[in-house]
Image 1 (cartoon, rainbow, N blue to C red):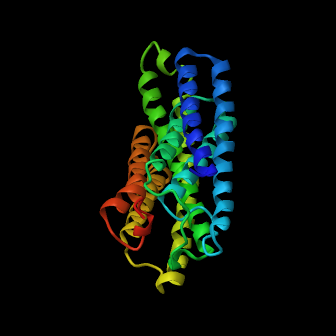
Image 2: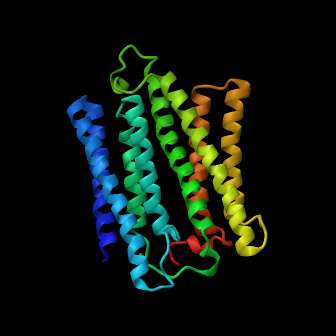
Length: 284
């Protein structure tokens, strides 16, 4: 096991511990524990960052043909996915001064790294010709910033559904530490807007990259098709909110459906639909 793999294995449990602390603080209303959870998350994020940087450095020590940004396969993309989720939910936490989102967001980062740990081959391999492009970095970063925003929006949407139901009761003990549903609704909209812009940029950079690698901008590859389906779901959400005035439960449910489409685009296509993006499967 390399140093970066060891660090990332440890970080997986640190994210999980942070999620447990957030949940404990939410249930038992312990602000001191919630603050500790934030610090633990920041430690995990530092370790996550170190793991990415070390893997990038190690790629150059393996051989002159292998040095590259660590975004080229399922394992590396999941590590970066966890990093982007942690960054975004910490920013949201600081802005809204509320730590309950971490009870759902930190476990998502933990699950991303835990799933990455099952990858059969974590070794650094030379890039295939199609991946030897600077567009790889731009495409992956923009896509995963979008995916991370959708992941945090998914967590917020779940909190919204719980909060809106609880607000109808006299005793709101279950969600007393959760922000009001109106704030959660607006936060979902902001996160989806942020994610939509970056997903759009990811699709555009991917098209330019495809032109360079395969001489055409769009080939209706399964990954491309499902990325477009995901884009349309979030475009519909934003359109219905701005033009039809949709709010509340309907937007939260659309946000959840959108994230399920993200998961299928990310995982399902790799396993069940072969295409030009098949290099992203864990078996390769």
